[in-house]
Amino acid sequence: MDGVSFTDILLHKFPKMVSKLFITSSSHQSKYFREFKEVGAKRFINKPINEEYFKHFIIPEVNKILLNEAKNLSNPI
Image (cartoon, rainbow, N blue to C red; front, side, top):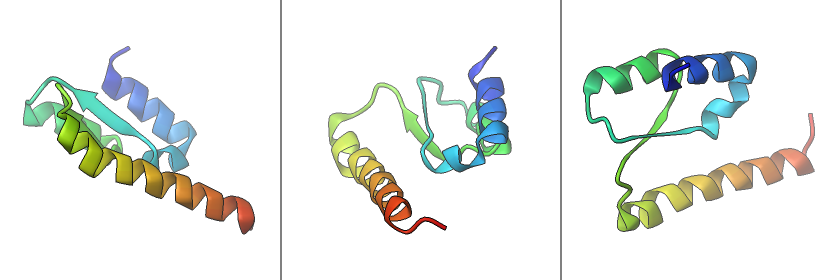
């Protein structure tokens, strides 16, 4: 199974995962990213991962996810 197929299955079974999923790839082909977008992926990171990019983009995104999860735990529906 390739990454696109896995992502498609994951997001259909667990749609809330879309906000937590980061796709990493060394492929810089727009076709490849388009396929992931078509199955619902939203966040992409090119490899090799640049340390500065990681610090300024990925860490804040992960912190947002954690904050949202904490809010959901304290305010269950």
